[in-house]
Length: 576
Image (tube, rainbow, N blue to C red; front, side, top):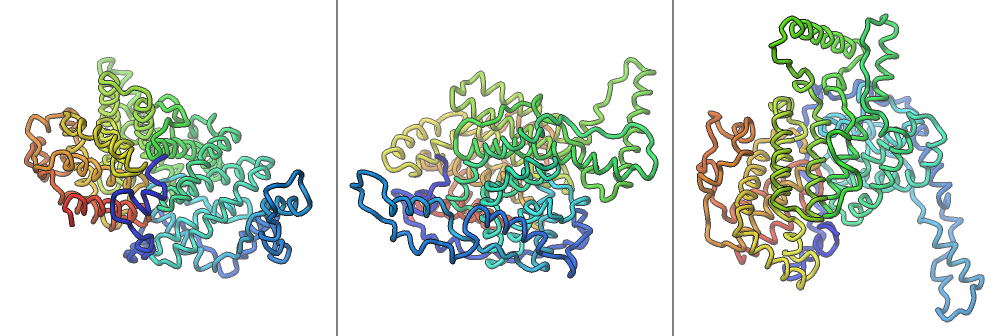
């Protein structure tokens, strides 16, 4: 079991109790510049839009799943309580069983069209850039994608910044989970688009639950993860290796059809990549082996983000034509000069989603190996793989317009996972009780005097430095809150066992992963070589910084809960 159980979130053994009411305060409403955002959808639900198009599929599903209204419910569950000494089933016991098979009724009335409009707009502006699995330019509401649209609205509601809107989003999320589980068989009998919408809605819902900060939601989504994978397999999405692009001139009339067929394939590829990312997140959160087999060769390849975010079929086709011409020229040059070094065209324009899934695969593989035996040979192999990933992808994840998914933070977090055992760290602060905490602290003491602890500290400090440099208007990716939390956990565990302040030495910062291009030079004004002077002393003030960052970044409630846990640890260090 991972960190997300009630014992640690609401009451940590051996540490002060944290009341749940501190988690109910709304976040501040952030200033949004959505009018000029390239990801904003070009359509809105008009005043003549019939909400029944969305209301009917959900309400009909819920009616079939349970009671359609309160009047048909049995009077009270206590009416069917019977003695535990029955020799056989009687009618009262049978009625009790029938009651237990019926879920609680749910009010499925939807918010207004204005509310849904704002949710949709905020989803595509704030969330879709960091988790691009829905093609915004071609997305339109219909009865076939009703569940997907409502899933979009549930996440979009979080970005309004009000407790009321967030509660509405949670209500939609909870209703959709029940609807998905009870209606998936009807989608199987329909076409691939509806099936894909179901899987997309499930993935978005999984993300909502994962970042909600509610222990029951997190555990439920982890349990539901295998079901989402199974649906994707049954829909044939794992068999789609790429979305092929047209390689010949097409009449103007055919561009729209070509675009729509490409979008269908591209969305299918990206939802599979999203499942790989989720698989890694769940494996590292709950400290178990991943369900999927990770490896770059197993991943489908999505197209560059410029193509995915192209607003029209003509724009998309113009980009395809431009790239085809450029590739043909380079191919001709290389054919004329056999000594020329062949350039890697796709490397300079790879999609962030592919880079994200491939890095998530390395993190999942580290977790899988740690569950068996992560020895020095395996660590060196993973270190080389992480350096290779950086060499392949760093050019197209740099700059403010290419940093939506915060992959350098994830890259440093991968090294943290390689050098530190987060499961032991969580146990050491009381996740599994006092006895388990005492045993784990002994392992933490041994870790704190190791070279790997010092390396973990360096990467933890870099995660926090990269996090400080994120633009305030950029929503952090789904891995960022946990990366910030584990960075602070590494610092806390190190200080707890080595209370005297210390500063990294020059020898310690001379690591291969700290000397590669763009690993740290974005943190240095002149891009000079990494030195020990750029790292602060390892002291409790770093936890203050991490707590402040977690309270300010994004709209995910999990960030606030992580901050509250770190506050307890900070009080433990300072004996406040």
